Length: 466
Image (cartoon, rainbow, N blue to C red; front, side, top):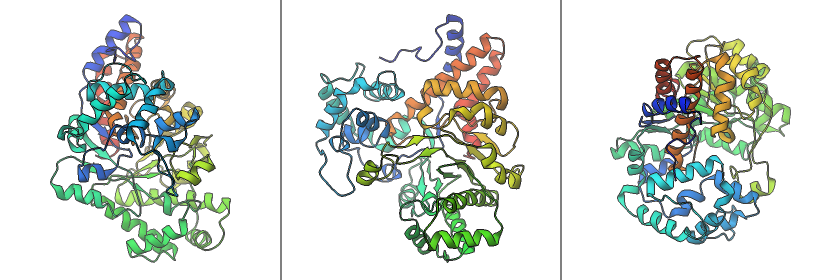
C-alpha cells in the first residue's frame, strides 16, 4: 500500500533526484526533540493494552476527525472527567474507527496510519469495516510479544533521543525510573511551565502553591516565584532536559521594571485577574524565561497562536487537549520586540519559534530569523505538519531565512507508532523540495545531499543541544 515514490515529484528528472537524496537519509536515526509521548511507557515497559489504546484513544488527530462527523468521544473510549460511562470494549472502539477510516482520505493522519500498519505490523491492505477484526487481531497479538513493548519499539524505530513535555510541577519519577533501570534509550524531559505562568490556566493559584511546596521557595513574592522556576529548571536539567516549552495564546513579550513586575505578580496571585493583566504577565514571563535560558542554557521554544479548548462543552466534560484547539492570527514583529531589544543579540540565547498562522512565514518569521542570531524557525507545526504544509513552509521561508535558520523536524506527537511515519514524510518532502531546486539549477546536487542530511538529522540535534 505504501508506494515507494510517495510524495516525490511526478516529473521523472526531479523524481530521480529526490530518490537519490532520500536514499541517503531514509535510514538515519530519529531525533525527536519535541513531543508528547508518555515517559511512563518507557519507564515501566509494560505492553500496550490493545490496538484502540495504542492508536485511537491517545491521538487527537484521530478522534477530532471522528468527533467532527458526529461520533461522540464516549463511543471512542475517551475518559470523562466526571467518571461517567464511556465505551470500554476496545474491539468495539476499533470497529467504529475502522468503519470510518474513509474520513481520513488524503489526510496526513491516513498516511501516518498506513505507514504504521504496514511497517510495524505487516498489514498491507486498506483498513475498513470488513477487515477491522483481522487488523485488530494481528495488532493485538503483536502487542502481547516482547518485540512490541515500548523500549523494543523505541529501538526498532531507531530513535536516538526523544524529549517528552513535562509540567513544571512534575516530579519526573518516570524519568528517574528510566535512568535507574539501566536501559540505554535516551528519554529526556522538557520544561513546560504554562500551568504556573498563565493566570488564566485552570487552578493557577493552587498550582502556584504547589510550586512553593515542590521547590521550597516562597512563591508569595516575585523574587521567590522566579527562584522557584530556576530551581525547577535546574532539577529538570539533572534528567537531561535541554529545552523549555511555552504554549501561550500569543507571542507577546514584555519588559517591566522589577517593581512593576512584582506589583503585577501580586495582582495575579491575589485578586480577580483581568485579561490585560493575564496577557501582561505571560508576556513578562517569556522575557524572564529568556533571561533564565541565558543563565542555564535551556533552549526556549515558543508555541503560540492556538485558541486552546475552544469547545467549552468538551473542555467541561473531558478536560484539556481534546482536539478542540483552533489556530488564530498571531503577531511576532511587535510581540517579540521587547524581548529582542533586551536579549536578541546575546550569543547564549537560543529561541525556536513556531506558528499556527501561515500568513506570517514570509512576512514576519523568516525576516526575523534571518536577522536575529538568537532566533530559529521551528518546522511546520500541528495543523501544518503535513506534506503540503511542510512544502509551504520551505517555499515561504527559505528565500529570506535560508535552511540553516531552521531546526529540521520534530514530530510533536502523542501517537507513538506514528513517529517513524512522521519523520519519513518530512524527509520525503524535504528531498522533493531540494530536488526541485536542483533541477531548476538553484542548488547543486552535492549541496542538496548535505542539506538532506542536515534537515533530517543534524539541525535538530544541534538546535536543541542534544
